[in-house]
Length: 398
Image (tube, rainbow, N blue to C red; front, side):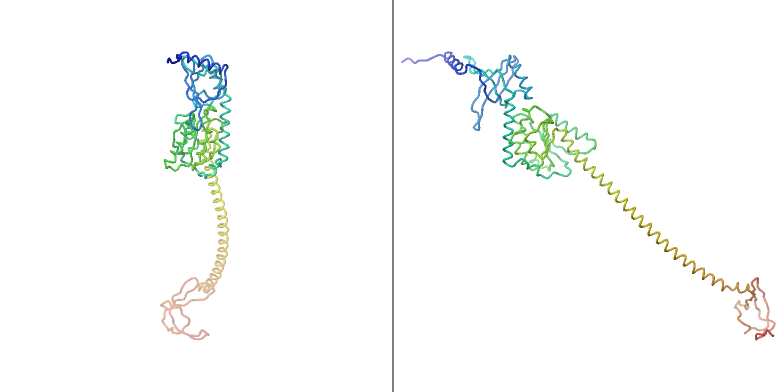
């Protein structure tokens, strides 16, 4: 019995007719970019896919012809701040196409950039709600922070401008303060960014170094570039980390989920450097103020002690002055008495002091005999005499 068959071209042609019949017009399709390649001729080829909790469930090839790509690509980047790249969820307007030679292809006519931004924000809100329900939002803020942090583990990309700005700002601080910075390299954008940062956080703990804080920093970028910092897994690890984590990711207007759960967040890497230096500046001011207060207290104490010593010296001087005056008065009285008892004063009144040849004062004539030598001392001189005779009694008769 002869078998019925069709050739490959007819088979492909029927598939083509079926596709064109099912999708006569363009449709909007949601998918994730799994691969993207812009060719030299201006065309862009993409791999689109869809996954669930069990893994990959669908994939297709897509193309943006050069006539559309030169408009779609710059517009998408101007709205989202990021070029089309792997890992993005996109909403595309496609025309399903089937070719007998090249198979099934989705020809992309347009891409809605607002969808990518909106989907990102929706996922961000879900992450925040989950972290709140699990009680993880404020765990970091309950950690003690060192009084003067010195040793920091820095998680960033070594060639990132934000990291270089941070290091330079620290090194060139006007106060000359020094801190220790150890870099733990990590990817700072893209779908592998969260896992890379979590691995760096693990490496910090595995190093067994006693770091005062961990710094996660990178410079500015598009919203889609920085979307990885809204990742739940990374935020949960930061929230439960045993060391204070400080973040500085993006521009002034950026605020990510990882910033919310961190111990402290700063708007830019240079702002983070200023924050650290201000801690040291504040302590330096406190020390200077304490030195001033100590000097003032010591000066006041010395002034009071000087006043006490001056008062004590004055009292001592007064007491000694009185004592000296009393002693001088007593000495004067004694001197007057001594002067009054001075034999020379008696002699000046007409009396005579007589001494024998040995110089012994004669108190009377007893024991004197003729021929004895006697000295008669007057106020103005001495007479050497010889006793001719001795007379007793008060009449002076010899």
